Image (cartoon, rainbow, N blue to C red):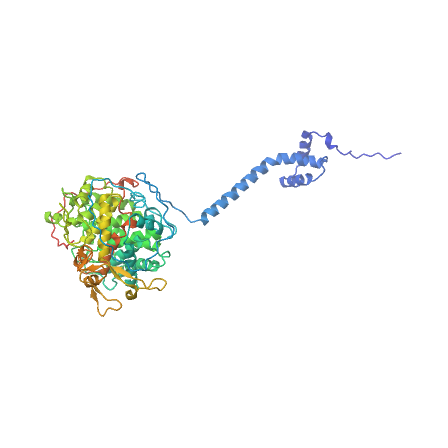
Length: 627
């Protein structure tokens, strides 16, 4: 009997439908990973085999979830890469300044800074300008002169000190060179010479006038402002970078940071004229008796922080700033030693307080709302010193003090420009009152023109420091600015004392001797290489090339010597550094373009309501120094 084959004949894949294949696959009850493995193996079999057809079915069924998983994985990887990239890149904050009006397109400024001059400058011959000044002419704008009126809360935050943007962009080397060309500046060589003089006279601890405690803080702060105005920064400026770093650290080290460092412990906590006030944390050790130095130091350190972002500088400003805010009196002003209990407003002192507060605001340091409230209060308070003729007086102590020193109209006009009052009748009248004023070193100077109003007061260079900014803010095409520009270049060229490289004792970063420059101060004398003894400044200027019959240009030599009460005498102490700093800063107005000069308080985050006591308080007896 033959054997019977009882085995099941093999399936013919071609005879199976799709549904039968799916049923077959489902009945096998394999795990998800096993199904993927079998699918991959089946795809490698002949196309007419059962395993291949099952693999095709599995691929179709598993493709959707596999695709979703794959897309999710790709998305997660992409997001991780984006996060890593973002963490590796430094943050970039861009400050956008909105143009007040359309301006003409300027040529691209040169990428390289102007080469520092090596030849000693010659005095420019004075060219008499007969400019009819239309003080009612509208302000003009220039994108070199000012990118726009800088709002109080604008700030240029730069991750690296190598690039200056926003409100400080005008100080960068290329833009500075463009401004020098645009304004026909012939005095830049004197500025370089003076920065070298500052470097030569800096003490090892970073201070100037370091051995004179009542002068050192103010002198160092003003010197630092000069370097910053010229765009000189640590790590960037080959010739002056180390000098700037030492100055910043010198001011920080000069600040009282602990209870143990507090000085003048027996002195009163409140102010007083020419009377020391007890030290406080945040004060500076080298302050003057009225503590102008505190305000100027905060101004300088705020600019330094905005341009360098050094954390220690920010901390120093934060320690010092509350004294200014809390030192404002109920009337909206300030008096010596930031004594808020005194109801008197001193326009000179208040002008530095406003400059310091706005510089801090621009640097985004301190309590922004408190700063803005103080600035708004100051805007209202300063108007208490205005007069119908457009002038401003000295203090609100009494009627006599209110009419003293109308030269202080200049700082008051700058305050109005800074605090969104440029277009007010009060500001226009103040500028009109000063329309005949010219740069000068003479007290109570009156220009030689019909109807000229005297620049009355004891501190002409102090007034000119402010007025140069006020005029510049009118715009580079304004006739009042054009006249002032020509006049200041002429007189400050004639007054500059230049010490040649072979006598100066100064060497640049390459070890090459260079000339130095400073401006003469009444009673000062200096000794340089080759001098048998110290020579008085006035005598040295008279012996300098360009002097003819005791005249330099149109001026007698004696009229080119600074002897004013504020910048030269510095409350009786006297400082060659302070005296020349005020002159040099005027010659840097072209590119310094201080962000303090113009700005809208109306552009801040929210309106801040403040109250100003208009009653004036009780009459107090105080002694005042000359300004």
